[in-house]
Image (spheres, rainbow, N blue to C red):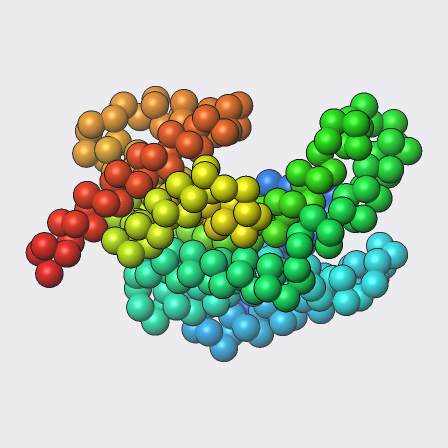
Length: 299
């Protein structure tokens, strides 16, 4: 096929609906890494054709996913909620990017939306441990029935998972939305503007205000055991990790970091995630602070 993927999707919104639905089914069959893929397609349609067409693609794919869920024996509302989760945030961010052209603003808005989401969940649903503990215990029993060796009750993970799930759900939502947006932007710019996405990604930052908020949240989480504070710290750690990765790519583009080290960083994100995330978040905080200060002074 001679046409680029972005051009093909722009010319075939019907195919985009079926492709989004197909990609949305992948995580249901154990391919958890594919959660961000379905949201990238309607986001691409927004960037190429406009918000109206992107919303239509997302709506059509949501109906397909709901039908697929029903055929798999799950209630239709579950499919609609799942579709809203994987397609809604990338779609909204793509509309913002299409109108402003700023990946930086998209990241900042995504983080602010994540903060609002965490606060709203804690305010409306109360103690996360009490809310989630029954579900986590059911999961633990199901794991035991399937013969899995991990005993959540004995290892004390039920309370830990239940207490932190609001934060992890929010972090995952923000990260998946941003990854879908990154992929859509890369698809869009690759045919005629190769390298543009890389240049935009390398300039990602949170800004002074969110950078200070991140530092305060992370410091407060180390000094207290409040679930809300811990969840906010997780969210900011995820955002700073993205900024740290952007800094690593910029250093590589400037010749200050060997390309092999990028592969090492991504490998360590899989093999030694806690340490690598902490290191990247620290790098992201310093880089964000220095560049935000320069931007403020030049303004």
